[in-house]
Length: 626
Image 1 (cartoon, helix red, strand yellow):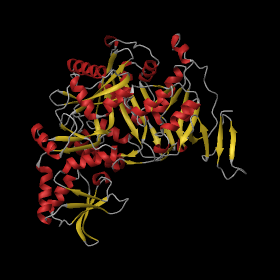
Image 2 (cartoon, helix red, strand yellow):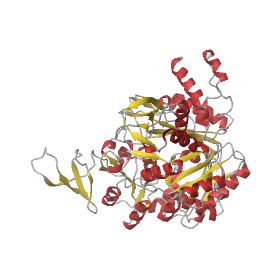
Image 3 (spheres, one colour):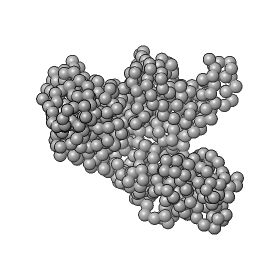
Image 4 (tube, helix red, strand yellow):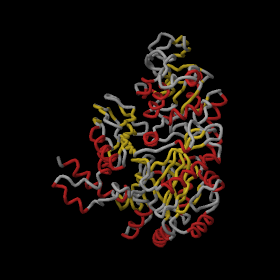
């Protein structure tokens, strides 16, 4: 008997406690009482027998002897959960999957040796509920926990609780997470370690006057960042001092008073700039202030003259009214930081224009040994969200690679880091690099590093967590060839990357030499609207970058996913931005496309905005010309 279940189902004659065996009961209304009095739903479908005796021929000796006593709870979902389970099984370690009610038929649940439902669909009621995750681990006898990426992977308090419960967290210690999780503290720590950092404030900004004074000293443009931000959120760019003041002067000169943003309703994304007499200058400035927000209409609403603007709710800070004052962008950044991250701390940095986003993969053991596995170029981004990654970067020469690699190792060593991590840098047009942040977890794009280094980074994570010393010295690591990864999302890239959840009617991943698809989907799988839209990562390797580009084009052509929109065609256009001039009907596009950018590696974080119009034009023809 596995546990006792308290059943609330009205279909049963009585309500009370019933014994439950390994197969579980098919009801989301039954709540298990497990572990240390935490509540979560029981598993919803039978599981096959645990692979307690499964061992890989590729791993023997002491490792297998150690692994016989281990069991890993995979505290994640989607492709990364599948990825972790597969490596653990190759190491002879059984896995327990956790899942929400809407993930009960997910692939990671099917592949795991055991599975536990930990709550309802929203992640705030399942994957982010620490008590439920840990109760599942304790009840199933797990000795280790792999967090994947996202969710609880960089939650220092969660790591503390794991240790208190005797569970080996596969990742860094909580102090490292805290230091690198606070962007301002991380920046100061890196400066003390001798790692180059972007010129900016010494710590958190304390006042508007301080922000304005420092911005003038550093020189515009400047970036205001939330110390608890991440993933492209919590940032505001000020290109010049007059950028914001000009609008205020125009509006306040017209009104003689402050300007208010009025939200139309609690669910609306539209707001009114109240009391403004619309004119061309104000409309233009308003559009610039809202960073491209759509100015939808102008006129009168409920006796209030104003301009109707489509604008993200974060701009009005989640409040019914938000007053624009001369503190401007600084105050907006603080307010958004408080709403989004529960921390209104912000700091100031010099804005590096059109940089490359270069990140180094580091690995450290518990004995002070640290190595890196080279870099990844993640410059192809849309609104600070990565779309395509490659390794190595075409922008780095051996000298620069060594300098950045040494800085990455120094960064990890300075905080006593343990496990895999990523040191992210900005590389400017002159070849100067600056520390940006550290991700204290496995990254989505880690497969390109695995492909050029012939290393399983998940396995290395587990080995380090088991107390092993690194098997590598820096001179042992040789990087070969070139690898590219395309993130395949359930989004319509030609309609503003609108999410497209739904049922996958057919699925055929690409194959062929040196081609890999990390995914959790299958024919009939229903992509839920509740989580990230990532369907999978298509990765290729080739001896040269040119060959890797051609192989990725072929792999994208081979990949079939129907029933929902995907970003496959958008990736094709990125790769073909030089050579998409093959059909005679499209010859005129040669005047629109820069024929060199991607193929010659001339990319930066502004690549997508630079080519937004070209990609939109090409996308229209792409779907109408056979």
